[in-house]
Image (tube, rainbow, N blue to C red; front, side, top):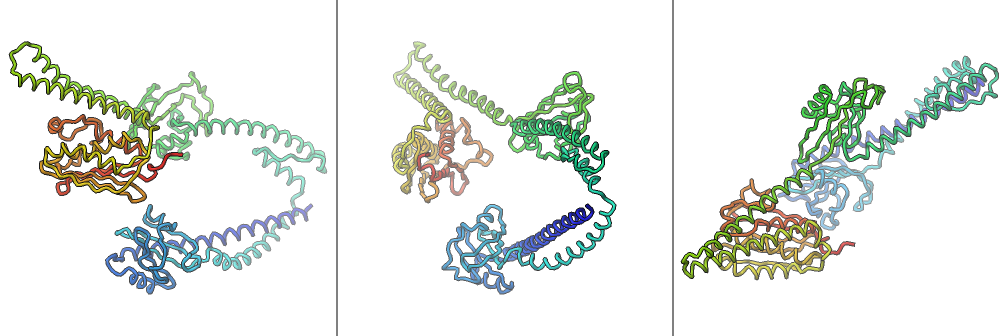
Length: 587
């Protein structure tokens, strides 16, 4: 038995030493790799700071390579073209925009990768840095991976392992002389009782006393295993439910110690599960939140607070539960008891609900105001006509024309409101077809020519062929509203430029006018319903105040984006960008 213990111990030591040696060697190799990555990253940052895009980029690449031993230097333009290389003919090299290190550098400015080079046919380590002009400076050095470092480290590991094994064998032999097999087995089983234990074979024990101990240990281990399995299932079930809740959930004791916290709460509070068992301060430093928790516990009442930040509104409900109402002073988590009660905190993101409520209030308020104005004008004109006053024929015609104009204004406003409602409700999304956007632009430009003639405006149209898969009416509304705004808010004798481009990746429609620039403080709100930069001027030029809102809804529905540029030199330009995906029907 002693020999078996000795042989087993030695075998375990050998396996452990081999694993330890291999892991150590591998870690050493990985450290060497990391050092190499850091060295290349530092070099490329230094060279990128010295890089001058105005000079010969290939010459700069060769100059940098001359300073660095066995390092290849490549200069890549922002569109992926190779403009310089120290080891290859850059003019014959293919576009590098799809290289993994370039893709990563586009997003993070700097990147390091290891891959096979198709140009020189070797395994290389690449370090890329994005320069100020949008180009990429890339260093590459031949790299065989961590294996060479691992192999160089193995002899030292082997010598150390053999020496350790020799010493351990001597110590193990001496130790095994005082240890018997049955006692070792009992001790091992007792040690494993907490984890369910390992069943012993009592008949294999030589002494009766040891057989009785083995029976009792087996019974104890089986009982504990059943209870542990049951508790673990319940714990996993509760954890699964809590972590899959959209709402954040926390449970605190009366000392504000975190007893339970789910994943959503961690996201809302920007913390992690390490806050469990700690004071609430370890989960959040928001003073409003901390004060509400303290007030709810001290007053044993319920509280509700809003936590605003980064464009979100999180509503937190603090509910105090005393011993009589549910917890009963039992231990909840981490051995902490809620003898005096506990605080349940639930959190929910109510940003969309709050914003939707505000939008609805603003919409009804603005719509009521916009409808009240023409109705008041019509009412006044009708009262004058019905009063029996001796009005001249010209005056009567003027009143009738005013009634007609205000009626048309209300009709246009209601049409725009219904249009937005149809777009938002999705009623027109299914009615799609191939739309020739170039033809739509030309037709709408022809339609605004009489209106442009009143201001003596010149309309310059430059369109390229472009086709969309969309709702034809929506596209007409989008283009028409952009053109009408460009005419209405233009200056006398001004100019309207309409351009339509198709890059193959996206379709770009730009409408520019020479009108007064839109102040920056209004730029982010002009797409809101009924929002007007200059209300006095807007009343003069007419309109419903919903045109740009309709444009924004249509563009969003196509997965595109709209951008505003406005200044004194170039006037005001609205640019609509639509991805080519919108040209194809959804499958």
